[in-house]
Length: 309
Image 1 (cartoon, rainbow, N blue to C red):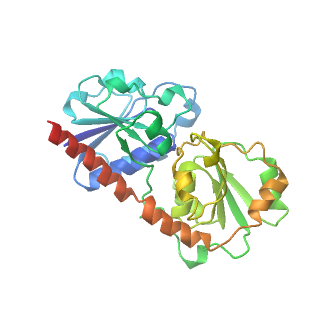
Image 2 (cartoon, rainbow, N blue to C red):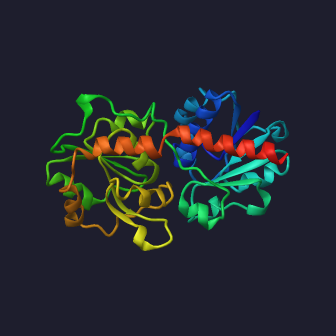
Image 3 (spheres, rainbow, N blue to C red):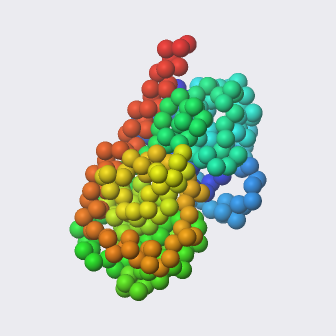
């Protein structure tokens, strides 16, 4: 079976991390996978120009990588896409599986009647777009994993990583600084799993939070939203009793807001840091976020089409 994954850019975003993970698990299971990066010319060329980290990585797992090249969509059984701009290009040449990653922006909204199968990455998108299947932005636990005893979270934290595309809030910086915690900020970084392991805890959202959990780090979520009501917001450390709320919202980096937090607000959360959350988070990731589940769910979709045809 030949499968095409269609993307709009080569940034290290949640959409592309989903595609990278999917490409790897499908290829390892024996599927023929090609990838097309069809640049939609939006205003983030400064991210794309000369930025080869993502393309170098996905080349390892696909048969062919097409960048701004014409593709014969008709030779693929399935095309897997995440932007409506590609729906009209593919037409009826192959079966289209659309993966919804965001709910706030028109660029992500699928044209439902033109699709063969619709996948939501959270309960939010699943319910909003009446999706056929829920498949989360699962994490490759063979790559995102704890890095040994030397890198375990310390009982008293000394370092923290703010993993977000947004600017670092001064109030967060000073809340850490006044407690003797060195806070660093990163946006898109190749091999982020090697960076995460260096810190005692991570402040992030969506996919970044999943990655930090898989690496065995205490993970702080602030004003995570994107759900159907504000009762599902999380301002807290990820715990076993709130992980299901976190998973109900999208993994998009755009559903995050820390503007209303003061130094004291951040400080109250930092003061409840517990290094033991790191090992608990790894167990949660193994139970709920393993990329093995992604493979199983996509194979169920493929099998469903075999039954129908």
